[in-house]
Length: 539
Image 1 (cartoon, helix red, strand yellow):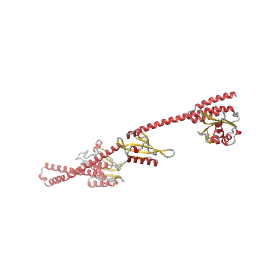
Image 2: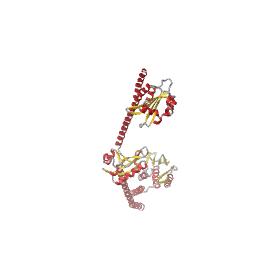
Image 3: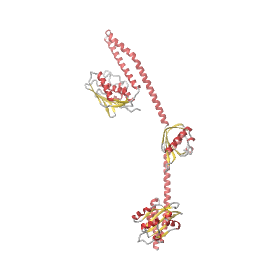
Image 4: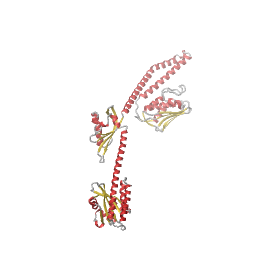
């Protein structure tokens, strides 16, 4: 007996050390208790915990050296009313229970004993510092072990007390750990909210009073959070604004979904600001809105910049219209005196040239040619003004048919030339039919002109990737001058070499830009040029 007691003390010491190694892990601790006690007092150990009001109890950890035995007991791992566990209730009320199988009739314990083939059992309560945690049960099932006796009860009582203390410590550690994690998480979230550059606020769902405000909100409104918390919109804003805010708040809470308010004015200490606000309900587990979260981005400076940009655009458009109108008026008014110059110079050349010496005739012819060239310039300037001022109406345009028509006109006007014109079939675009026809006419005129010195001239109209093109094998140009091609009066060749006014490509660029497209050129001296253009979508 003395040796058993000494051995029992050694077991208690070993088991207690085992408990202490698992104090920080509550779930693992329960299984450790069951395993360590089952090894100290064979055979099968149950650790059962009861509810705080001691109304229910159930096993939370089971151990036996035979895994099949443990598997057969898993079905008992649930909560039972205390009335269905009379021996556990007896141990809790009166102290340890030591019984043989013969003393048990039915009930949950009877089923367990039948499943195990048990011969007897001990149940002792687990208490620490006056707090009841549950009971520990040992069921003796193996024939090679002696029946349970008073010494086993004493050892199990000692182990149960240490187990209860370990459970108490583990629960306390878990609680403190959870509180620390919660505190850390709260501090982390607070740091995020406080450093968000947009205003963040939270309102209580019933009265819509503020319960949270971040630093950006204080700075925006010019009011400290101590003056905001517990108050609602009517305490700070004009009634019309407060009514609007409240209506959106109620809409958010009622529909339980995000409400996006792209623009809303708000009165602040620094004057009226414009906000882009999003509001979302915060609901509990039952889906009931408890709070309203709002995030407001200050868009005042963006609105001011947009307004300034619109004003600048309108001013520029008006200035361009006035300038174009002025140019149109001048060009139009120049036509009358120019017609007179051309008429009189023609009359003199036809009727009185014989009375003039050779040099005077040459001066007169030069004056006549200059007047004709000026008339062409005026006509082209008027054409440029017209394409700038004309209304742009997009429709589906058959560019192949348009190009064929324009090319036929050039062939009829220049019957002395043999030019191979290749037009890709099924070229279609969304564009203004009149303006795009003018652009094609100017591009083909350019190609026709600069292939004049080629014995085998060729012009192609087609589409490559997303860009339309007009390609020729004419004079070409040096790419370092490519940026100058589309300017008014910009020419890379002398008038005597290739006649023109330098307005045709500027007209093309104006038309393409009005379509929100892009125009560019590629070329090589003596090997021709390709003019590309895209037609952007309407805005």
